[in-house]
Length: 106
Length: 161
Image (spheres, chains in turn orange, brown):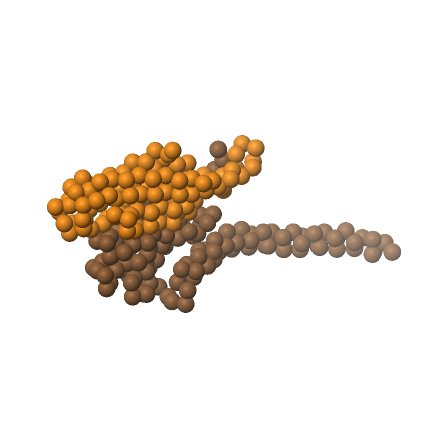
């Protein structure tokens, strides 16, 4: 499975806006690059990224080949309750990866 | 008989020169107009798909990109929009497009009031010095846009392995 790095604060005050950073290792082959025989390499990218806070979707992105290798996203959310923030990536050739983080809200 | 034979080379030479001039003109015309307009056209098409019948007004959105990019393979991009991000008034989606990448779409992001702030960062590829456009859709259905010209010295996407 692809290596994913996520950064979610472990603790937050209720109502605070917290910053979430995610990074996943992936080639993001565009499908526009020729190999050394001149043939185009087939596209192999992550196409979707979803972030859920206790099961409710808070952030979703559709990715295109113009996203750099090892897709990185920074976004924010309001800390509403303690629980789990989960991340899911899916893409070409059946690619799928998940990751999650716990957050305590006081 | 002699005169018509003498005439012929002149006629063909003249013909050749005219043809050559026309060809050169045609080629230079093609070089100047086609690459400059072909992909902005497809970008407009992609933007039209997002907007539907609506039109985007300038403002409320800000694209943050370095103006001079050394390496187009990983360019830090931040798009932020002015919005209170309440249930009644928030940013629903952020779309980013480019003019001269092989494909106009870069990323489409869907947000909600739970985001707290409408600001998203990622890293993108840029194939050429070009215009980058961001379109934001608000919860009331209005669209806002911002665009930025950037200079790229090392292009992404097209080089071989």
